[in-house]
Amino acid sequence: MSSTVSSHVTGHPTARRNPVVVGITGASGAMYAIRLLQSLAAAEIDVHVTISPSGAAVITQETGLAINLRQLNLNRLVSYIPAWSTDRHRQLIQETDWDSALAGRFYYHQHDDYMTPIASGSFRTSAMVVCPCSGSTLSGIARAAASNLIQRAAEVHLKEHRKLVVVPRETPVSALQLENMHKIALAGGVILPAMPGWYHGVDSLDSLVDFVVSRILDQLELDNRLIQRWKDGS
Image (cartoon, rainbow, N blue to C red):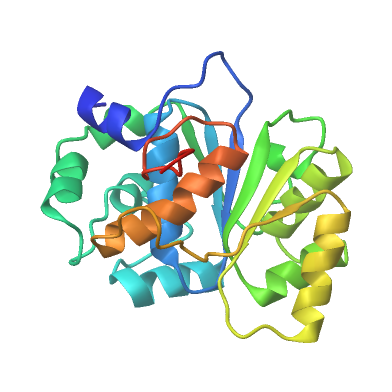
């Protein structure tokens, strides 16, 4: 991977770590997921990805990318550049050798394959992120009633007391959705709504996406320079 992209998107972990699991579901906000995958690729850690059919439909709706979940081209997804991206970000993505960045580190699993490693607590991971997280996914996780691999993997992270970060993107939210978020939080999950801040020198849509992704990376304990951070006395 281009060293420029690597240093810009996220810093490297200080030591070899267990993989991160990323589940993409059918809430709006596909670009949050794509930017997260780009950042994790730059961190040079192993990543296991699974996408629900509704998640694939939203990706197509919001990016125009045709997603075949049976033969997914992760490189094409991760290298996507929205029309509204700044020239700086566009250049960073275009200069990255995504074949090299993903090879041997990114693994894709079918949403209905319960025989895959991330469905088992015996497969060690460092954390999982559900981004974006739909209301039905919230419900499935909160009730421990998995209907797909994403929900099952999230249950595994809760029962194994590993970090689970859930990124809902919906407004307004009902009392039932709030109750589901509360249940997940009580079980040890982190509820991180896709609510970008505006105090970090917003100058583009990229900076709003980066704010949310930066906060996710903070939860994963990955150093990053995606945003200008708040400083004492500033």
